[in-house]
Length: 257
Image (cartoon, rainbow, N blue to C red; front, top):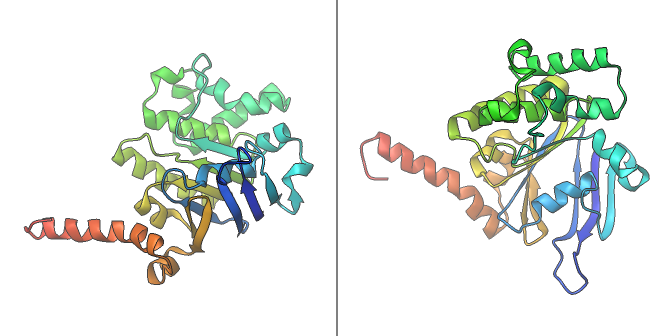
């Protein structure tokens, strides 16, 4: 569904590449998680898929066609995009926020109303209770649910997620992460997600792609990377949740962490 072939991005000729010769494939229905520290190139890589950032070199292919063959605005309207800041329009109601892309696509109003109610139900928000609310009247978790509904409004087959749960408290974050995984399977979405959270990545991904300084260090299933990291940075990254688990087990046993 998604192919990156030797993709690089330089913001100026004299700077080091923000993304350096990255290649990977994302199969239909797969969730690939891009993992790495700040400045590793994860978000830039994600944004090159929907042309929010244009590659300096290399190819990005979506469902068999290079993304440069698409009008960038039309491309983005047909790819779901969810990010940490949520980005709901504060002056629009929940229903109006979800309806933004369908209205741009000139759907009939009756179809838009049906779609809004369908999506609110899908993300566990009662249409009667929430469609007329403004974003400021919602909790952080409710706002992110509306963000997911808006990203799904046009019925995309591909979804891009940039730290979608990062601003939420731990309980809401885990709840929404699990709900998203169910939703993704239900809709057979192909997804690429950026996160800094190692545990979130391991528990969510079909495959992990670990990046550092713009380069792809290792890609594989969580089990494959845990068994054979092949790189000192990847090994250190993967050791964090294991070490935290051991510390928690020590606490539960009554010892020192």
